[in-house]
Length: 80
Image (cartoon, rainbow, N blue to C red; front, side):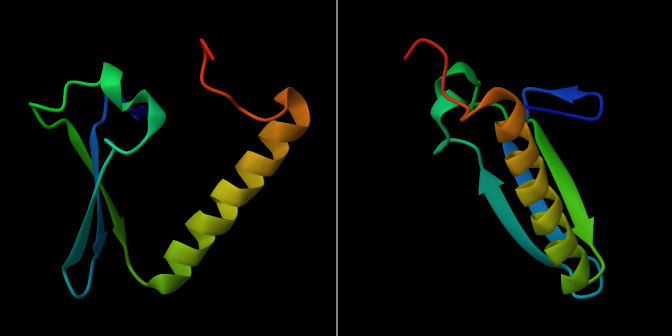
């Protein structure tokens, strides 16, 4: 995964700015995890001001998935 100028992200921390509530998402459950080095963390943090921003991100990801599937079909792991 690449976010900004960081490559091989293997952990994502979602944080609420006002309350400093954190949720750490490790990439290991995803199908491409075996190609990531999970011994050394290469994290990225996404900070939200409120739940409206969380909802906006969810909506954006749903639209991205839908539009991507319209162009290239259902994404499948290569080699299967």
